[in-house]
Image 1 (cartoon, rainbow, N blue to C red):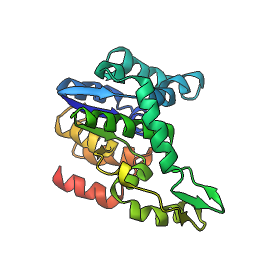
Image 2: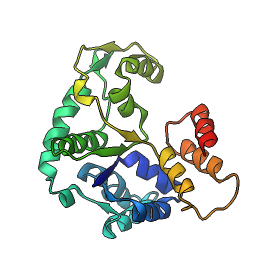
Image 3: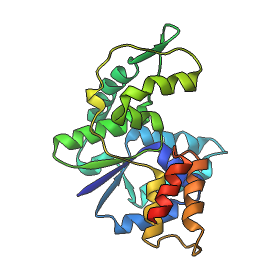
Length: 225
């Protein structure tokens, strides 16, 4: 079974671009499950559904959950409590790695960390998973932690100090962004738009709505496409 774990960032990017319908069609071709954690559900459904500005997108994501396009970890027989315990453990490590002006830097959120936690729990069960996440910091924490210090300096415009923590718990995750998902949607012929500019439009749409992808990366994807 293939498991794709969705962080809030990717679902929000897709929702803001009107691509949740395409996600539904992609699921029909996917040999496995699309999973969201309880923390991600709070971020994309429970909280925004109470805010008029975000209510419509939240209802659309909720419909995907009601239709079982998206499923909860309980469908994999993994409890929310177990995920929460692992999430807390990883959060404490991540958010104590760097400090600025004598204060710890909150590196990643509970939602993102819960996706990492679920992936680790699945790994223990010999189940492979990929995390759909558009947030750059979380991916860098796993893939290029040595570059995080300079990234944080640029983002915060201040000096950042590394506290000599252990990055090993964050290594080895597999990630995919909304940019790669829309590329798959394009290649599978799921998009209803039929025009030579569709791939370019899809990639720039997700870039401008939250996906951390450079123009150079977009051009590279278009050359493959």
